Image (cartoon, rainbow, N blue to C red):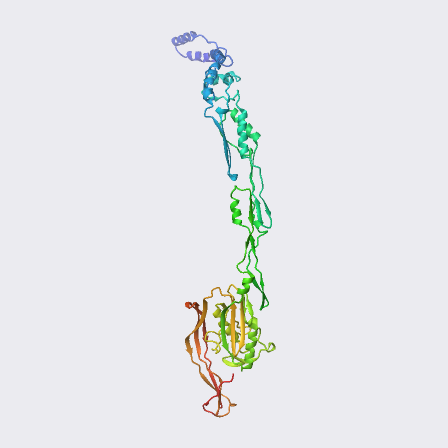
Length: 576
């Protein structure tokens, strides 16, 4: 109403004609009534939806009715169903029976079940083959066709309808319902098992006075025949051919472990040992008898353990006689002269001779075993008056003076020469300060208690013995042993490299009578020399080996005279 009022008020301001016209125009438009809505929507839209819904229900009902009619009218085997690789889908049950009967004659041709049993540890490689055509009687075509027809019919109508429209395939699991020759299969299994199974036996042995007897172990092989038979029958019934490998737990293998025969061997093994010499003190000895070796042929035993073609073997004891028996050693001991040396002494020099004799007695009959070292100082001991040694001429401070034990260096030097001739290994040697007269240049060995020693080692394979004797002013040292090469002999050669002349020194001494002179020390030249071992095999020189290099200082000549004498005349020789 308010809108109309506004229009009329506006029209009052216009002309009469316009007012009349507008009033007329307004009066010719009829007023509209507002329609009622259904469920909040326009009625036309509502009834349109109702119509569509009814149509869908009607069509759905028709579609479902068609599904039920299609499934109920389908009297054939569902598509994609196969049995024994034969497509049975779309056939009637009778057609399927006919097709199966036609195919059954050739169905089992070429089908075989190979049963294998392998184990490299025991050398097992056995197999047997069951041929289907030899054990199968027939197939039950009616039962298979009935199963094929029944497949899926216990499922829902919609599942069956989907199966009719699907391209899926289904292989029908079948059994040889008419059976097969189970006894023939069991006979094959029996034959396989009996040829494979072995009763386990451990290795064993027996020791007696003659040797070692070994009973070979046997690897145990056991097959659970009941479980194996069930599996084979299941496969045949289920038409599962191909290869079947027997494994654990159906197959049980127990390895017969080979013992370590070396452990047993240690209980009776006796190593052969040569007869030997045993020292008693430094001079005595006794011969220890040889030991006879006792053993078995362990290499043959180990070789036999790698084979299985034997059951019991005896390995007699093998006795080994050592190369050196007590009888042989008795004949070999100290049989040969390895080296010998001589030196002269002045028996009128009583004190010096006494010292030489004491040292000679100490070293005489000394025995050295192989590898044992000789020490002159250890054998002779300290040179003291309490032990019987005397004062005699010794070198001291460049002069000849009296000292306890003077002269024993002749013994050590003579031993040194014998050692070189015996070709023994010298481990310690010192040269005199001045040349000595009892051995050639380069062939002496000086000693001094607590300071200088002479040592060598018995590096031969047999014991050696030192024999030292004094006779007719000659000291002889002989080293006895056993030569391994009888043709070998050694000579010594000393070569002078340089000579250093001595000087004469005159010394005043009022105690010397006038007109006389006294020579208190002889003069000796000094030398530089080399000593060689000339090694011969028979008469042939095979080696010239340097033994040592020696240096001797010159020994000055000392002359004493009275101060009143300008020059000493005809001096007397030195007193020694």
